Structures are given as structure tokens and as C-alpha cells.
Image (cartoon, rainbow, N blue to C red; front, top):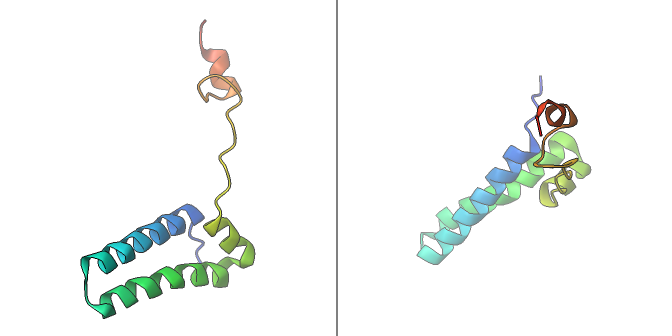
Length: 85
């Protein structure tokens, strides 16, 4: 049985591991530590590709924009109708 992991979570982990790899490199940590972090950064897109295909990897690396709100302060139409102006 396979459980789908949201792309936002995978993207967040990819960014965190990339930052940790950079910090480990600048801080002068041992090479095996930097290599392990870098390999983890490479493994995340690979795991997404195996689980969801090339389209999922594209979404992971190039996140789409959030849809624009319909109006006002980002309230739905139903919420907007409930407000008294």
C-alpha cells in the first residue's frame, strides 16, 4: 500500500536539507556529513519521481503560484455575503 505525501511537505524538506548542506559546507563539517546531506537533497526529487512521475518533480522544483483571491481580504464569496458593510 502506498501513501501519497503532499508536495508541500516534500518541498519543505528539500529546502531544509539544502540549507543544512550549505551551512555544513560553510561551517567546515566533515565531508561525510556534507555528502550525506547532499545525497539526501538528491534523493528527495528521486523519491518524488518514483512515487508520482516527472510531472510531480516539475511541481516540486517549480511550485505554481497561489490562485488569486476573488476579492476583498481573501474571503470566499459566501464569507463576503455574511459580512455587514
